[in-house]
Image (cartoon, rainbow, N blue to C red):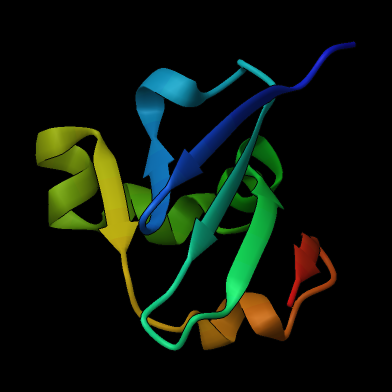
Length: 80
């Protein structure tokens, strides 16, 4: 199965990307680059995303800061 690749300026989870096999790369404000599988992150934290007002209203969650929660999981594909 082919991966779609997306490079952004921030961490993002979007309902429109679910099921599209997308791997996302972004660099945070501390110049650390993260690469992650969109669907794996959503599945792992689905209940948290689904409870967020922004996710309910805009069908999207973004964050440009360091993601300590993700750093402590083994689902990130890579960091620098």
